[in-house]
Length: 452
Image 1: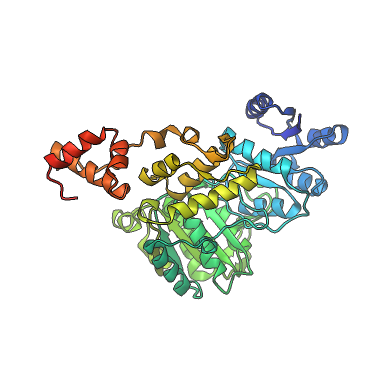
Image 2: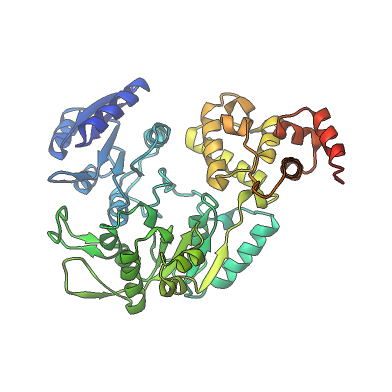
C-alpha cells in the first residue's frame, strides 16, 4: 500500500483528501505545517509527497528543493501562480495541480507520479490555466497540434494562418469556444516563432482575483501588501524575450485592463512596492470565448486594449466543424492515456465510433480528451466499449436552435436535419441520436418532404 504524506494547513480540506485516498487504498499521513512535514519525512518512508505551496511561515519550494527528486512531489496551488509553479517544476516537483480539482484528476496525477521514472529537475512548459489540472510535462509529450496530421479543411486554414503570423511579432487574439485548444494554438505560434527558445508563460485571466492581477502581471516585493511573504516574479518578467499567453482575457476587470494596457504601451513594468522600472520584451498572445467587440460596445472592455491585442485574429473551429479530425484526435488520446495509465487498449468498438461521430461535442477537444481518459481508466479489455462512456454521450441533448420564431414543425425539421448532418446522412444512426425508431424517422422525413 503506497504511503503518501499530505502537507496542507487547511485542516478540513486535508482530512477530506485523506479520507478519499484511504478509500482508494493509500496509507496517508497528514501534516499541517511545513516543519512537521520535514519531521515526518525524516522519520518515515513515503512513496509520494503532496504539498500546498502556500504554507504559513514556510516555503513549499524549499521542501521540493531539499528532496531533490528523491521522493516524487505533487504541489497544490490555490490560484494561478505562474512563477512559483515554474520554480517548483525546475526544482524537481513531479507535477502540480490547481485547486479546485476533482478526485479523479488527483488519482491520475498520483498514478503518474508513483509510476514515473526518477528524473532530475526538468524545464517544463508551464500553464497556469486552472481548467487544465493535469500538466503534460514529461519528455516526449505532444503539446502542439502540428505534431498531429489533422486533415479537416477548417484545421488546414487555421494552420496556414498560424504559419503566416508566427514569425512576426504581431499580437494575436485567438477566438474559440471553450475546449477548442486555444492554448495549444498559442504554443504552436510560439514554437514557430523566433522566440521559441525563450519562455512561454500562460496566465488564466479568468482565475485571478482582480486584487491579485497586478501581482500576477508584474510581481511584487516582500512586505508590499498583506500576504506578500516573499519577492515574486510576475508573468511579464518571467516571459521576457518570450511569449506571454493571456487566456480568457475578457474576464479582466476594467482596472486590470488599464494596468495591462499601460504595460503593453510602455514595455516597462514596476513590481508592486517598487519604484524601479523593468524593461520587458514580450510578445502577447491572448484568447477569449467571448465576443470582445460586443464587450467594447457595452463599455465593459476597453477599445484601445482590444486593438492592442487584436493586431491579428485567429478563429479556432469547434470540433463538430472539423470533419475528419475526430478519429485522428481520438486515436492520439488513446495512445496518450495508454502510456499514462499503463494500458494496452488497441481501439474503440464500432458502437463507440458511431457514438463519437453522432455526438456534437459541446466541450470540444477538451471534452473528447476527458471522455477518452475516463474510458481508458475504466476499460480492462482490448477495446473501449460503450459502457465505458459517460451517460451524456449515450443520451445526447441535440444541438439547440432558436425556437422563439420557429413553429413546432420547423423545430422538429431542424432537429432531424441536424441529426442527419452529424451522422453523414446515415438514417439508422440519426434515428439513434434522435432517440426514435428508424420507421418513425422515415415517416417524419416523408411527412416534411425533406429532399435528403
